[in-house]
Length: 320
View 1 (spheres, rainbow, N blue to C red):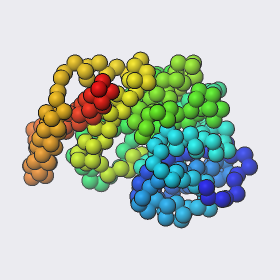
View 2: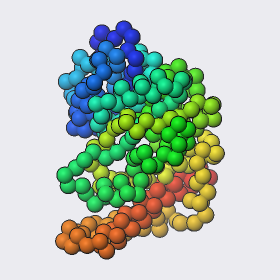
View 3: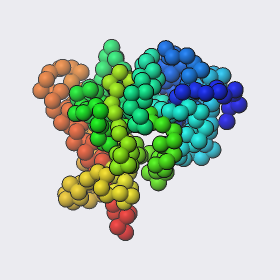
């Protein structure tokens, strides 16, 4: 732990799990330190999850403003967030992600929501950072909601939010409440679906989840179809683990109906990835709506098959 003078009575503690976030981490930390509320009102706890890139060096440049923790071995998001919560000084804890840029009013808006609603959890607005040249794939993710992104139009009732909208990239709750309900489930390593599972327990314990559209963070991740396909394989594996913990949280029954061999799914994911790259090439030449529509259809099939590959692999291991 970085030995800094802890603030006496901060109102809110920001907990940031970091795993090889690179240059995005600089933007995230700079945005968190550039806030309208007084600095003595909040502290920032970072958990470096055994990163092997320049994360430690980047954190060192901000060391006078952070409480720095480090896992010696890769421990995952849930365990890292729980470690951060144990070191939190604020009455409210706020989880965000190292690939997110925080709006200047993020902390202020979360505190305002907790002032209005006693013992609640608050989810905020998650969007994409404005880019001068947005890639076709980012455009697809924004439209399809394959990536964590929620806007006011997504939330039917902002005063009673369903647990499926609980995303760890922009979530706050009282520290005591987090501890009382058992914190994040560390069985969900490395962390996919852990925020949904946490939201489920909050929801079922009668703790209201509210939405504040003005509490904003912006994803700045540079994603493409190749690295996101790998992510979806991991998400598929995590779905089986979540179902084994509590089958009532999400319904994955449809994914079990269609039978695909692991060999066939490997072939399909490679095939559609190749097709996607070809369509991207023609889209750059043509910019036609027909090509873009077909490209988005290929993206969706590729990610569906990637999720199914991870899901079926994990299911096969579970049943063996």
